[in-house]
Length: 320
Image (cartoon, rainbow, N blue to C red; front, side, top):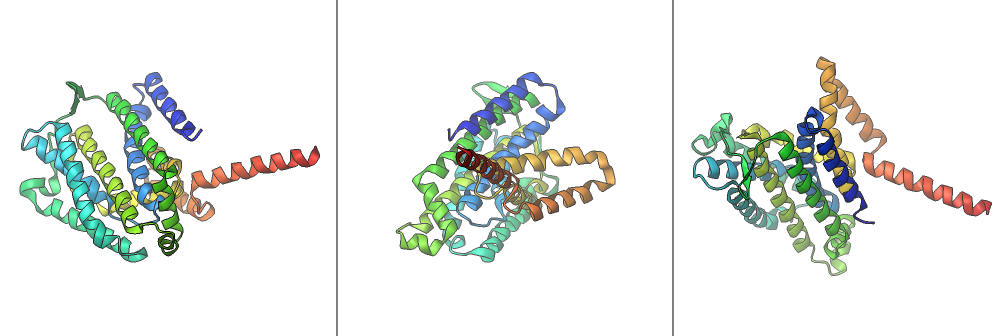
């Protein structure tokens, strides 16, 4: 029952890919949606479960992306090896950063992660000999797994559908595990968690590293799908967009993060038909949602549905 939502997600994703392989909204927009789902779900592990604020996750995305781009174009490494090296570098960096950064709380933690994102972005822009500077890197080879090249939109669609499902599976299982319960306790009150014997520093560091590594892997996959990367893809605005996805769907809910990622992927595609009014309408919709559904769209509607079901059951018992 716990994984029912995941099965529904997987069946719908695979079904759409099989039925409409040439459709733009499936093969192109769907691929982007899966990237955003992976990123939003991984960020939700840190923000939603542990209740910590991060405004710098684009930095980990950039580290994974540029590591894969540089190692495959300049040194001829296999894309999968480059992806693994990017994940290892991100894991080590996030481990080293977790000790000083995660001692901070609230706005101070947000500012520290924001600073990390800005530093990485400046390095990507300034170090032209390595990163190509503002122009970025191009000619990045396609991803190859067991001799099979992923070089079409629909192939990436199916690959990312599986990886997004795996990310959701990790998130759901983590949420129900002992670690997940510890993280939720930390989210409620870190001081109370410590009095219960929870090693809050270790728990926060572990989920921070896991979230960063998944984000790095998504960055590596992104460059091999796009065959291009520039610092704009790892900017502060991208970090804010990821946070918006998580908050919009509902903090602490895996499928809330999925829902938020889908909304922020599909909405711009629909609003592009309104031309100059696109940004205005986009901002107004987000503002209305956050005002009237402060817990997030998915979480608010889930609670409403649960309330209606309980109300109907209570009415039946009263009538009987």
